[in-house]
Length: 258
Ligand SMILES: Nc1ncnc2c1ncn2[C@@H]1O[C@H](COP(=O)(O)OP(=O)(O)OP(=O)(O)O)[C@@H](O)[C@H]1O
Image (cartoon, rainbow, N blue to C red; front, side, top):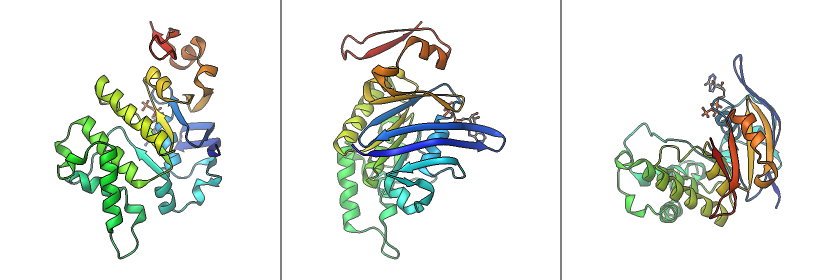
């Protein structure tokens, strides 16, 4: 698989506050990378810089071989979809309208949405299992249902890189796991590359090809789950004691904090 993303010596500051201090990361097409790290380590900043929400970074972010600052806003919007913890539109909108937002980068001047856009919206809502919500007002849905609408919007956008920012953090364990499974299957089926910000290390282990640990704006470990995970790394990242055992069901590593 070709390289989707290559980040080299990435630095980003909010005024005096240096949030990213020289981040290096790479990701192949079709892979899921989970980024973990303590509060304030720079995870959300990293996603916002990659998605083009934050500009004026230093260093290099190559997406499919081209520096992201050289993509137009529209080109980047077609390639990258960003899924936040919580999406709260300013107006009272129907779910279908929100999913239709995913088609914005494809609208041609003076033409508006065309039949094809509505067809893609229906297909995307079907994939996210929310066709029944088409006419419902977004604000009337539960947290988990809302996140499904946001996922459908990302599917409709047909981006190649999906950025997930703790997108299940407001959900109970059952809904969180179901949504994670849905997204993981969708990523693999549609050959999307994904970066997932996570606090739940065991959930990250279950869905990811690779992990990256950020601390104070630097990547302190990055690689395949089985190659990098260790008790000493967990202690360095979280300053917490843990034991790593084999998950009896999945046979993957299971981190137990104590
Ligand atoms: N808009 C902002 N203005 C100034 N400083 C900011 C801003 N947003 C974030 N920061 C700072 O940048 C650093 C990294 O924040 P960021 O939100 O990227 O961390 P995070 O790892 O995503 O944290 P969390 O796990 O708590 O969500 C923190 O020190 C934070 O205070």
